[in-house]
Image (cartoon, rainbow, N blue to C red; front, side, top):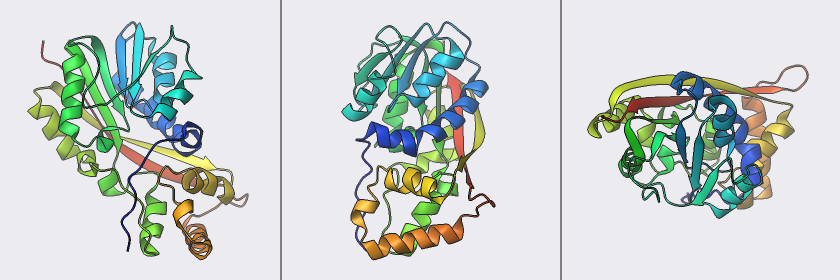
Length: 262
């Protein structure tokens, strides 16, 4: 069994099909829970193609938003969504943010912390750039309990001996790990919540295009025709469809928030 290639987010349009609808659903619940108030300065760390950044603008009326991601392609896609006045977009590393200390009222990582090679360093950087009393928050798919939207695909790929790459820091998606990390960093008033979402696909072809063909793991490109046919068959057997062919999939994430000590 060959080792899977690391996940690389290099196609903003494919990511839009693959994860943006999930991000918007979970992100809306996350922002409703965060209750940040209007007129705040935000940093969106690991902003991808801007799906969560759009929600910040629409729901939270920020005074400013800085969005940063390591992928040129993702940031290029985000640039098509935002004017320079709305969002300051940057290419950069979550473990070495290019911002001064105590700059932002709110620092968030939306579906990102488990992709950071050193989650502690990433969370510490969010804390560093947040003002005293400001909010430091994150949510990630609950990978360890099967909560990711890709769980069905992952399990069927495992079954045919072609495992897909998992996030490198999946352990941090556990509530216990998140709480321990926020406590270690001295973040106060910590709260956690599970965010449960669903997505309905028009039919199996819609699911296949969105969750397999568009996957940043490059699933189709590393399977033979016979393996593709087997994976399709397995997923069709696994995923119940309505009389019209629609398929609904559920996912859930672990969310955490707290405040930087004043």
